[in-house]
Length: 444
Image (cartoon, helix red, strand yellow):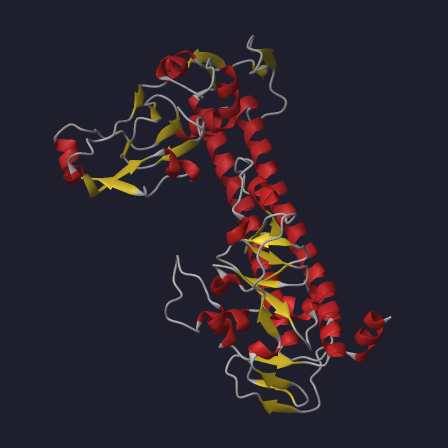
């Protein structure tokens, strides 16, 4: 980040004036304020026969409908669209989408057609699209756009009138080009730095998982004598470790339940009731939905002891594994495990590590199923209790260090994103001046 910051020479224009527009504040003296309609008009052309359908999204920008579906992991199907209600757009048009008040106006590099819910904008004059691409995505402009109507809420789209209510600036075209090129270069540097830090975060997570795998399957002493376990997916283990089926390790292997939904008094209480959605968290503290004491009294559900392991046993998320510190409840898609004679936290780390192995070992055709009979027969390693405790202490210490390192990288990423947003705002509104050297560099 320091290298990016140091490369920027912050300059100011020689003279400024009050724009009279709240979202812009002071602007360079030679810039002018105009109504938005003087720079852009609506494109009202219907879709053409050969237009490809495009989607305007805050996440991906304007891309083809098929590419959008693929990126979102949705099934791509051939649908015959009613082109009479679709709108044609040209490359270099801008599009007001249903969520522009959240993330700005989208720029299109493509010709095609978009939903009738979108509003295409044609640049008329004084407009360099590369510059306005940044202006319309700047935090200052988005805030101004979102304040144009108190009707802008979830499910409601912006209209052309909202766009027209936000005055814009006329910037000399040479300066628009210079600012756009400047931001292209600087944002690319920042994005590269962010990507490098995000990659490092993934590497730290991978390293944590590798070290956990080694600890729970081979112990902490690299010089200990080993033996062949006789089980292909287990491989070699320390010679003094045992192997047992889960029914011999755990005192409780129990599937959860769901209270009768016909009695609303069973829900919205104070008792945690975990579902597969909650198991996105490694440690379970609070469930999204809760049940009442009445559900316990009526034996619709029952408590499962704290310091237990929960595993999703059926469905698309089968194998997801979390640790439940406090006595709670869970639904029938989840199986709970608790042992009194071993360390539950050790077996949490081991079972989480073996999730893919269990799914590959289970016998099912279409829907992944890990039922109680499968779990009871599944074989696990059994180190001496003292080693289990030591392995847990090692993993927790390791996890704390890696967590701190990841949190530091996350903070650095947030600072870079904040700096990027600040730089864009400052450049497009004239708060900083792009140096003459940069102008000449990009005019060649």
